[in-house]
Image (cartoon, rainbow, N blue to C red; front, side, top):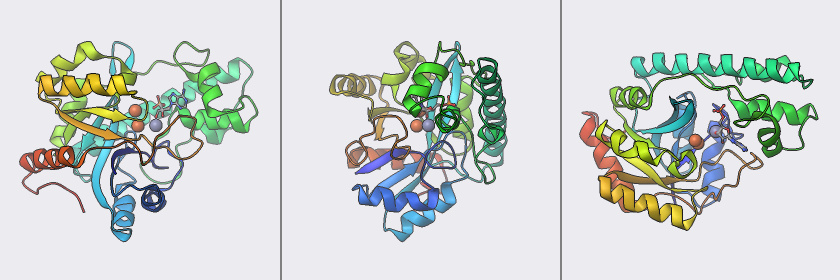
Length: 281
Ligand code: AMP
Ligand code: ZN
Ligand code: FE
Ligand code: FE
């Protein structure tokens, strides 16, 4: 299984980047891309661990854009993790995340649900990014929610009392940032984001792929985006969106991924963009 959507403790996953390859190999994954939110901090360790387990690896990222007050997640594949332009862009993204989490914590405190100060600090290690799942776990630790899923449902999700809207770059700006770092941009889990009306315009604006196969896509949804990818001549990718066991979301690790011929097409596209060729090990 080729899984091109996986998170680690460099963002809101529960598995350390160095441990991830072993965990994925045990589930039947043979090649993966680490796509942490707004950070490349886990890529070196994950790549080394992939090599140690004989797995294929593709440098990746998942960057949050904002369209009309809604989050749009954009995957980047084959990015150069050492691109200075990308590093500047991501640093600003992580600062925005931190500010948002602080505001969420203020709202929670105001409604009588204080969480510890450590909950609003990014995970230890340079360049790691924080997000609502960290707050959700803090709410569980503090006894304010029975599970991460309940914390989102009751407090943190859109329209809930501690929801704080995000500010951030447009999808086009994120596509450009990925392209400048030598990567290919894809729309993550369109069946979850539900922004179908945007996709043709984004395809014309440099979007290269859409995530057709995803843990949250049922067969009809998968079929719909499969057809849309063909219609718009977009590459099709897939991944589990694994965040670790007990991360609060259903995840079909080892069961959902990118077909090998689709992966080859993605690598060809990355190689065509970059004089260094596809960055995989
Ligand atoms: P943020 O980047 O801070 O907006 O947080 C988004 C992350 O929260 C995503 O990676 C999701 O995996 C996770 N998430 C969103 N909704 C839920 C939910 N209802 N239950 C568990 N995790 C969620
Ligand atoms: Zn996440
Ligand atoms: Fe996402
Ligand atoms: Fe994700």
